[in-house]
Amino acid sequence: MTIGIYATLVAASFVLLLGEKLIQWIGVLRTYSIPAPVAGGLVIAICVLLARVTAHLEVRFDPTLQTPLMLGFFATIGLNAHLSNLKAGGPVLVRFLALVSGLLILQNVIGIGLAFALGVDPLLGILGGSITMSGGHGTGAAWSQVFTEHHGIEAATEIAIGCATFGLVMGGVLGGPIARLLLRRLSADELRRAAQRAEETLVFEEPKALQPTTPAALITTLALIAICLASGDVLADWLAGSVFELPTFVCVLFIGVILNNGLALARVRLDQQAVALVGNVSLALFLAMALMRLDLWELAALAVPIVTILAAQTLLMALYAVFVTFPAMGRDYDAVVLCAAQCGLGLGATPTAIANMQAVTNRFGPSHIAFLIVPMTGAFFMDIVNAIVIKLFLALPFLH
Image (cartoon, rainbow, N blue to C red; front, side, top):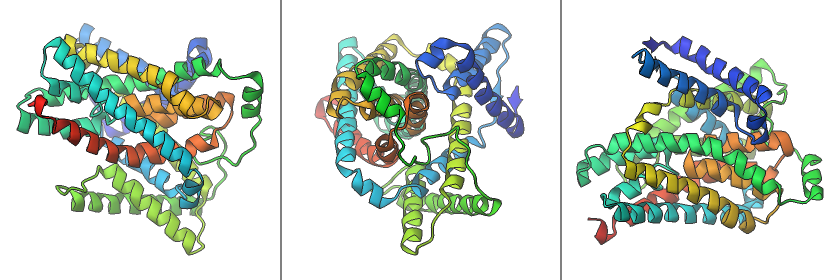
């Protein structure tokens, strides 16, 4: 049974409303700051799985809107990226990027090491490493073609999608519990100061806040987003096949950064309330669609060695956040939010990281620096570093 584009949009909206209600009704979800799209999306994905198993009914949601929503979200990140702010947060951004880069390397080391120990092709360790864990579905699908064409791994695409699906789920589930664990290490004064912060919030910090705007401002924002999507698509095609090849969403974000800062130089101010409204709606609907469309049965089809590698990657992410990222980022409230974000970055994708941060800051107070550096780190710098790391590991002689 195929669900059409409009019905899919209705279903995604229902997922978000269901997630909000589940969080209100179930204390565990609220306690561990599980994002609403994750809570609602997993319920729908499980229902679809049960329909497939019990009634042999295969339900397919229309994916047409998912990519534009994702690209729209990244466009709003770019339209909110002020280079002056990034410069102010530069030292923290560099430190966090170094930690993210360290995780990319460890993910591949763990993956390759376990692949050798389990007696399977070590290239599967990279496929279950930073390619799909930090890269997500897009990077996994792209690299799986290389693994099939150049390394003879016939089921590379299926394995990559399965690994990325596992990561997307665990990235959304793990962030809240890790944050709760680390919050216990903060003093009462630190938590009180976090709750009382009166900083000017950024676009994605308060997704549930009222965003006063006007039709003209909203139309202007939508026009700028459309420019980002069209220009980013052209830029991605232009770079395709070159050493500078980048995913489309990175190109869209880059165009947004240029537009935003170019308009700022011309003394034209964007309506940040309109950017916030469109950005948060795009993020919520994209995550809802991505999670409710999860093919959970693909996880069951993964072989035992791959499942073992994925379980180890989850454990690595939890230990790395607690024992490396938290102390390295200062052992304060901002560090807690950054750890929740890194669980999303390291196992899912940038949208999952943003959702994790929102779930934590909605309860415990804003984290200006986290929302300043995580979107650009996850959506831009991390993909570039990951591409370099992957190519370096693939060049190792003992893998061939």
